[in-house]
Length: 147
Image (cartoon, rainbow, N blue to C red):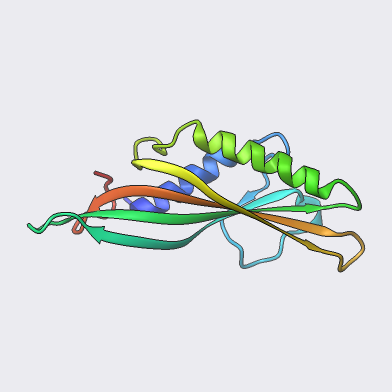
């Protein structure tokens, strides 16, 4: 099995695949640029994680807070801010339909949104970044199983 972090990320990608505005254009990385024909699109990646040990007897239980970013990319000459808002609505509602991420997590929260606009190129590109925090727990010697 994979680390619970990867299982949660995979769950989020599956949850966001097939939304009305972005469709199947959901990708796991932010390393490579997205081709114009694949816009609008979502990029999903784990940004950081904080661990807190909850018990003192080994194997110790660790509560973890995983920060996941969902970046929405839109290209167009008008209404790109409205499209970002529509995508954000679809993402937030889809994620909140199962805050346990199929029993992998204790909770999922949307904690922020930031928008950026670039006028470079033939059409403006708008990016909206949705920040998500996912609380989950593992044993320190079995990080592939949620507890």
